Image (cartoon, rainbow, N blue to C red; front, side, top):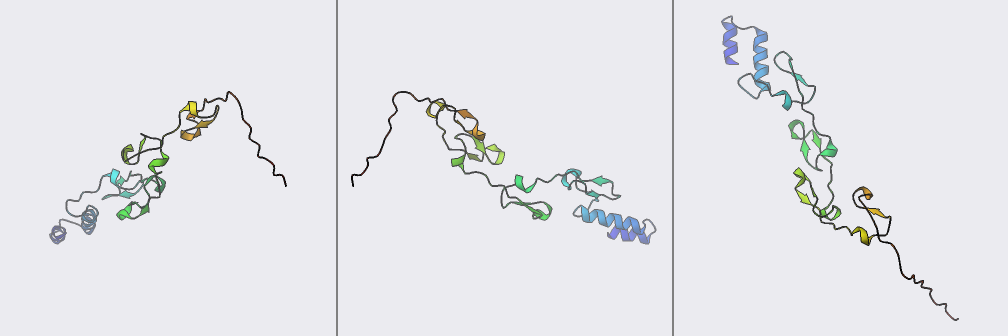
Length: 148
């Protein structure tokens, strides 16, 4: 900024040049007159020394960010609300969470041969179909009547 003022006094810069240099310095966090990459600026935000740059960063929606995690402008613009299931509700050996490896499911599903014939269960309620069929004798229990 000092150079710009000196330049103006010497007739080498115009007031608009000074404004552009100062704006550039402020936008870039100081010195150099550079601007953030378009990938680091929110989608559709127009910026740059002559409004010649447009941001392309697409922020995730709150449903895709963990509950309680702040992000966006100044790190507080948005707050995630995604709640992951507990490991006991996820099939054993299935990784999930950050990078698909943060947490590992622990629930063990019964074998299809141990589930009633035609009963669907597992992921989405349709991953497996039971094959256990009845056979042998059926016992019917009837409670005794009291003799009052």
